[in-house]
Image (cartoon, rainbow, N blue to C red; front, side, top):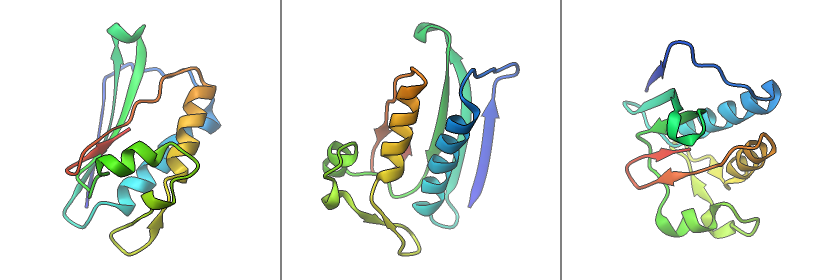
Length: 122
């Protein structure tokens, strides 16, 4: 598995360091869990001028992705049918996405999740 990072020079993120590091750690952990050997995980950051100058941090992987039905249930507490199994058979309930969403909201930012079967990005 290859990990890549790409950040614009001078990117500065004003965020709670504990919440921010927990978000990045959870997203990266999920990417590792659902990406097989030979896959790629990319973490990037840019400043979006159209978004009030907010930084956009992306964790994108070439893993198994999230199907549309599971995606709709992902951000609900009743998502038992959304449980998936990682590449090594470990279970994933989506709890870390709920935590990430809540932490992002606590810091006052939107929390988009884009996903398809080929890749997922938060």
